[in-house]
Structures are given as C-alpha cells and as structure tokens.
Amino acid sequence: MIASLIDRFIRSQRWLDPFGEFVQKVVGEIYKPLGRQGQALKSFLHGTWWGHALHPVIVNVPLGAWTAALVADLVAYTGRLRPEVGDFCVLIGVLASYGALVTGYTDFHETAGHERKVGAAHGLLMTTTILLYTASWLLRWRVGGSAHDLAVVLAVIGYLLVISGAYLGGDLVFRIGTMVNRNAFITGPKEFVRIGRPTDFAEGQMKNVEAGGMPVLVVRHGGRLYAISNTCAHAGGPLDEGELDGTSVTCPWHASQFDITNGRVKRGPSTFDQPSLTVRENGDAVEAKLSRLRQA
Image 1: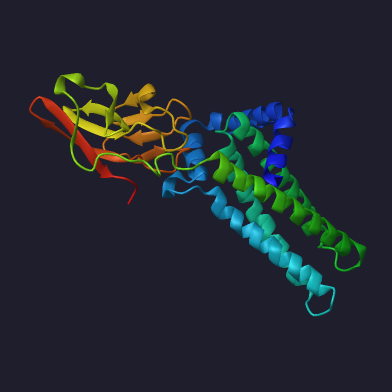
Image 2: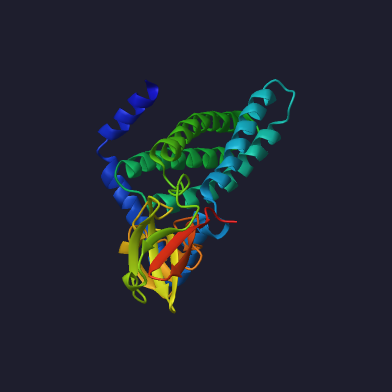
C-alpha cells in the first residue's frame, strides 16, 4: 500500500519531467567538451572498469558514517561520549557523499520516462541531504553552544531525508531495473544449434538471429564468425541496430560498447559483459552455443 501511494505521488509530479531533462542536459554538457577523455571518465564513474556499478558501493560509506554520527550525537548529550566523535563521522560521510553524488548523476544521465522521474526525485532528496550534512559539518567547527545543537538538528533532518532517498534508490534498482544486467537470466543453447548458412553472414555486417530462443548478434570479421547476446546488458537495447567499428559494436540506445569477439564491455554505461557464443561453420550450416554467460 505504501509503495503504491509513493509511486502514484511521484507519477503525479509533472515538474519532475522537465527537471530531470534539465539535469541530464547539464550532466551531458559536463562530459561532452572533454571528448574521449570525458567518455572514459564517464565509463569509470559508471563502474565499467570493474564490472560493477560504482554508485551503490560508494553510497554505503556515507550511510554508515551518518548512522554512526546519529548515534554518537545522541550519546554525546548524555556525557558518555565526546561530541567530536559525531563530528568526525559526519565529516567522513560528507567526503564520501560527493563521490556518491557524482556517480549517481552520471548513472541518472542514461535514464528515461518514469525511471528518470523516480531518479530525479531520488537525486533531489540525496542532494538536499548532502547540503544539510555539509552545513552541519561547517557548523560543528564552532565548538559547543547553539551552533553545535543546530548542526545536530540539521543532521537528524538529513538522516530522515537520506532514508527516504535510499528507498527511492532501491525502487530504481529492484522495481524499475535501472543498471540491472539484462542478460542475468538469459537462457541459450548449451549444445550447438543451427543459426543459418555461411552465405547468410557477409563480412563486416551485423545480423540478428535466434539461437535456442536467445537473440544473438552475429558478425563475420576477418572471415571468422563471432556471436554475442544481441540484448545490451545495460538497458536491453538491440545491438544489431547499433554501429560496428572493427570488432566493437555500440548500442544504439545509450552508446555502451562491446567487443564482438568475446563480449567484453569496452565503454559504459554498461558495467556488464555480453554473453558470448562459440560459432562454427559445419558444411552448409552455421551453428552456435553459449560459451560464457558472465564475465570471469
């Protein structure tokens, strides 16, 4: 019931659409002037380099630090703990939160529709939280008195907001499927199955075929056939409708790039490899079977 009410409330907030579009344009304009270096930085912040989204990993640090700060601040009022303990925890959380902010907005740049709407609400809550905790930390420089009391109040408000924002973050992943591997539950042929004839696959052309119910992208490069899942791991884009440059295929939806020879992700926003298939030409038939479901 609560989840349904929250979902209806967000859907009713029409201002989130133009707000989300504006934020995406700002993020895009930050990376665009940097050219290839900007794209490499963007892929790094997505987490492409290690096969895992970077944002949820960083988020754990401020959440843990601010939870510890909340407890420390409350205990400090009993005289059993020095207030500096809570101050230090707030500082750790603030420092890590800006990393979470940058990676979060980088991931948000690739959202659309209702996903973008929820992401915009999530980002707004988290940004407000970070500003509150930053203000709280600055006030803590003034030892004792009303300034420190106000800092604690701001931290408590920030903690309530971060919990609300975390709920929407979880909603983005577990209900909407943002940054979830679209090939996680893929099924395909474990034994060789026919996918066509050698003449069906011309040199340097992308062809979408079916192998045991699995959509497969097949490319002949240098006379040899290669095959990977045709469904982009990032958001499910059809790779055969993208661009092929040598052995690199670029998804038409969000420009994730993969190596057709082994399925390895070469550029984000995807953080996952594509399942690859072993292909063989057997007389007048081309056959394929899954060779790797996930990255090593």
